[in-house]
Image (tube, rainbow, N blue to C red; front, side, top):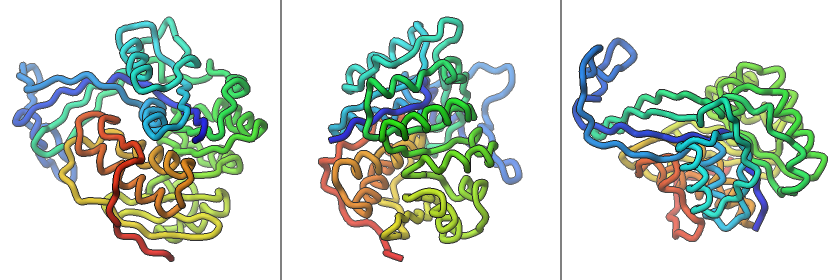
Length: 320
């Protein structure tokens, strides 16, 4: 098994779940939670306290898969931060490299979830996960990871470059799943791709990095920068390619969505967890899809994460 360090955000997710007051109401091309009126008091059916964030979700998957998982990120010494550390302890994730920010609260998301449709609206105060410049790339010298798995650092391109450069110096591979803020810095993002071994983006994100309108075009252009590229397209599946093979894939199962939070993290970390455990590129894509499907069937961004020991059925997959 591998040593995998996850660099990214840590959040406490507070779910407010209801079956009738949060029903989505269409307004043109958009929708709102139509029964929540300004100034009203609304009785919620259920509240659930979970943890999430790209760094947390991925490190939990790596640990469940049997890898040595390390989390790099920020929390505060408040109840939310302590809750996150307890979950990491329970899941067997090394949290000794967590940094504590004294003047920031731990990042928190309030998730309004309609139990009938699975639709949600997320209100996030990122707090300690708003900044990452205090994190030290020299920690990688002590960790000596085989892989560095990186999610959004809220557009902190300087910190990303420092970690990417240092990872390369010590011989660690990098898998990168950039966020909205990184995509806004397209020229800087492109320059960072020379350090990346595996890139995961969706179709819309890919179009902000390279030219192209189809999945095939976008994947082809991204392969000029990165050895392994995965471009997803929601319910349409996606395309993944490396220097030797390329696949067009569908979804693992068409399941009712209970909570879509963490589905992208489950796909990305699931792929890397399976791939670094010695499985083929193709089979790792199947596991990633199954992992994402499992997560959306449970409440919480990481409750449904798989371990890699499950028996999986075939899914739509075409070699191209």
